[in-house]
Image (cartoon, rainbow, N blue to C red; front, side, top):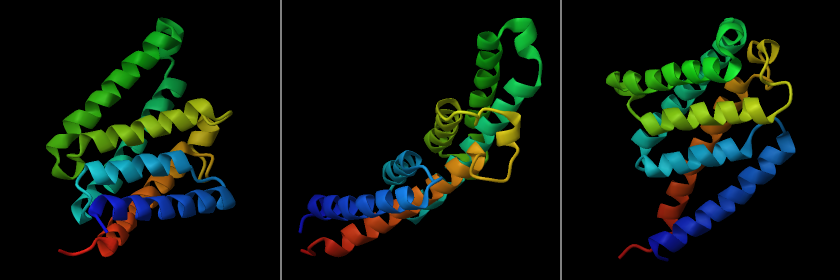
Length: 172
């Protein structure tokens, strides 16, 4: 089997299993898992990519959570208006993701932004998640926990699909 056919088959099978499992368990976010899955492959599709994807997806989720807490708890919105205040906070924290790449472990900048974006997607699309109570809870209501867990599982599924695809590839 060609590499592309094998990878298509392995991702299709494992993607179906992941979707079934995520929907059965509940609380975990299949869309965030697929973002991390794709991140794993575009980061190199190997053990180093798995490590970089997981660390940087979580780092991005942490930075987004801090940004959300700053937006909600520091009264900049009262003086500047929410759009300007949120824009400033997001601008500063997005810059932090990039500057953190000076530390080698945080060097996969796109993966950091995927974690950041997925966290804000969860917070903004899910009722009652963009609140101090939710952001500080130790539960799946907390975007940091829900997104990070989902992305770690997605990266692992990416790794497994790569291994399965390699096993199915016909050796020349």
